Amino acid sequence: MKLGETTRDDPTPEDIEAAEIRLRGLIHRTPVLESRLIDQAVGSRVRFKCEMFQRGGSHKVRGAFNWILAQQEQRLLTGAVTASSGNHGAALAIASSYVGIPSVVIMPEDSNASKRAATVGYGAEVVSQGVNGSNRETVADEIALERGYRRNTADAVDGIAGLGTLGFEIAGTERLEVVCVPVGLGALISGVAIGLKSRAPNIRLIGVEPRLGDDMRRSIAADKIVRLERVPETIADGARALAPSERTFSIVRRFVDDVVVVSDGDILEAMRLIWTRLKVVAEPTAALAFAAIVSGAVSGDALCLLSGGNVDWEAMKPLEREEGDSRL
Figure 1: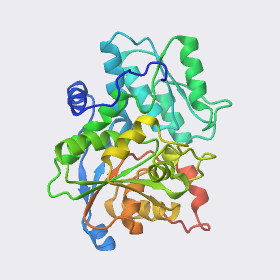
Figure 2: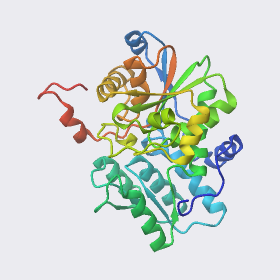
Figure 3: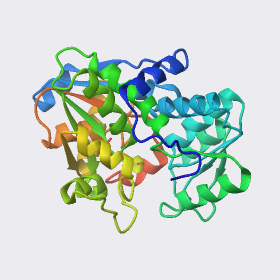
């Protein structure tokens, strides 16, 4: 068990209800948008839950705020440490600054530059020297122990409960059949699954991974956690997990109806349609959900969770095919 992690097993619908109360006035209830032109392009009705309009530009602040506030209730918090490739660290910085405690975010050296800058701007100390996708959790453990700070993990119970508020919100969408959610470590889809299935058990829930980082799909197929040999080289930087955690794997296996994969090309095409037709900016990881529709991996009317909009434009430039001709 990581330092500072709760001893409870999995979050419950009651934990999500408690999170809703804690988060009142601190987070936004984000809009559900749709586009007639997108519906025509893919041949079905698609709605988008737009978490790029959330504080910090992603869904992560729901979990970070709930974890921080739950820790405070137990008088356990003098500072917080987490490992993150970007959005989670920024969210923890926002929540920590709000309650007036220091935060340290361990980010790999090759992390998204704009996300790193945002994390610093929100008030966190960022540690990156010598950090990569394989050792960041170990470095975070060491710093938490050294400084006596609480160790926040992406799959902490109260964090997942905070993300479950999205499941509650989505469950209230009318005439909904299928929900598609991006999958990295699996915390987001775990929270959505518990919240959604507790209120609308008949809605199909589909997780979407990049083909180059399909650790959750492999784990489900093997009925045990499968760890990838190296950090996935996918444009979906928020989905570069090496393996699901024991908690997220257990929740996904019990509550998620299917996990599908898409190519980086599918992600780029999904981004193009979202940017040019829906007129909002979705980062590559957020576009995973819609990429499942674009690729044909999921068919029919669906709601796609756009998990964030923190795009590093400099990182997108190498994707241009030639000067003046970009997929985006």
